[in-house]
Length: 337
Ligand code: MRU
Image (cartoon, rainbow, N blue to C red):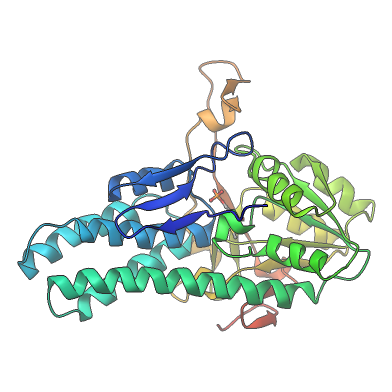
């Protein structure tokens, strides 16, 4: 089985696997400039909070390489617009802004243009390797929570595709299985864009982890019927008090898990925690295009000319979260990381 390469820096281009084509087609794209990287993030060709952060960092690095000037002032002005283009792609994942801020700090410290161009590539590569290492630890800490015979319910896609590393929630699940635990997974379809049906099912199948695909509205039924022993999901942004934004539908699962006495864990690297915001009320929820709701796999399923709501994420209050699985261990909210 060939390894998945969700995001790979080629020195003067960025290669990604096009996640919108999976599972039918395994297509790699070479992105040649910052505009192509920004488009890939916006259109979810590359997606999942940590993978967005890594792609954002390389996208800015690519844009910085292509600024043609030796004048530091002109370089900084053009760098601002490269960085702003990436920052405007998707508002919710903290990882994207972490990358923007870390690269800006690296440029700020650099002496001249050549040094700045080197510094952004170095910083992007550092972010990438840190994410890989964080998911390795998350998988190990999280797997210790999984018992032999457990059924784990998960939502959206949080595997290698979403992280460039081993995965957050899905990394925990795959690691528990690799350790020989006889587990089963209930993976939600994750409407509207079906990251669960398309991507989580693809990743679990590759790893040969036993799983069943369910529609989102079935989650409550399985929790009530004691057919899930724990829930593990990822996150896009976590506030200081532990309120956590994740794919739309996560909040309902968390409330239903609590109602039915099922532990609910969030697995996320420290790059997803936002020290600047006190509560989840400050998290900007991305509103995406109506087409994603009126269509399924590109085919219209709703009548023409109707109103639609399409928030891509919801916020689960900290009180529903049993614990956070991070690269530093497992902790209960509120969290200081
Ligand atoms: O809109 P997406 O597909 O980028 O949303 C992804 C999620 O909500 C994931 O659960 C989250 O980013 C955690 S990924 C490890």
